[in-house]
Amino acid sequence: MINKYDHITDYFESTFDLSRIKKLPITDKFRLINYIKLVGKANDIAKAKDIDAITESPIYNIDKTFHLFISLLASELSTEVISDIIECYAYNFEESDVYFAKIVMLGSGALMIQKGIESNAIRSYLISLLGDEFLKSNYQRMYNEKDILDINEENEINIKYKNFDMTYRKMKYDMLALRQIKTDQGAQKLREVIFKSYGSKELTLYYSLLDVHDKKISEYLYRKLMKDAPKMDRFLLTASRSMIRDVDIIDMHYLLNAVIGKYTNFLKPYSEVIEEIKLREKEILSAVQ
Image 1 (cartoon, rainbow, N blue to C red):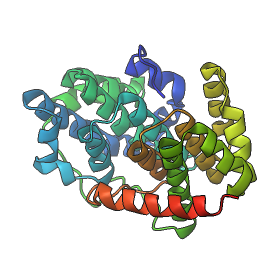
Image 2: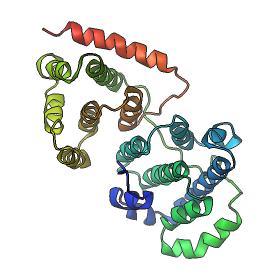
Image 3: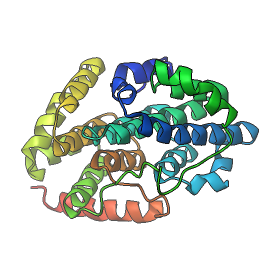
């Protein structure tokens, strides 16, 4: 998560292994240039009007990942939540450097748009991530062609998001229901449910570890445990942290989708999500002794 006083570039340098981007084959770097130009064009629109104007422009539906991050911006999520979502998606691509690079490029670009950074600065930063030699050889060409987008079936980087998964779907709504229990009945009731009736040893462990008064220690433990954990553990760690930190329930919904590696459907009404959460909350509470 980006801290309040962190500059976005410092945050990305300290959080992600950016050397993975520099080591990409040159063909992948040229494919990424198109996404850098896409971010620049989106920022031009935001500067001329506002972020919502991007969602009404022809470029909004050019790419699924771009659509995802711009939708998050338009939803007015905080920088902290969006940076967490970027991290959670990036964890899913330990085996694919080019998918990782695309997430980092579009994610950092989205945060820069949110912060109101000028378009040329965004383009310069993003192309610098491709390595010094590539930058020297291609910056002027990219700048001269900054308004020319060439994303097609042959050169796109088409990230494969996770399909519908009943195991994670049920777990996600369980975690959101637990978050709702805290909202409705307080932290003590939530602890009672987690420790006495819910029945997940892993969730009990992670919630216990992170639920400490020293928030810096809690955040340190979260990041240390997330680093090499398998997906289900990352899922439960993120859920525990969200409950402890009182993350908004819809923001938590986005976060857990990112951990799963699932694409968020922004067309689904919030009311349907909340209705399902409430139903699961009743089921969980009915099992409390």
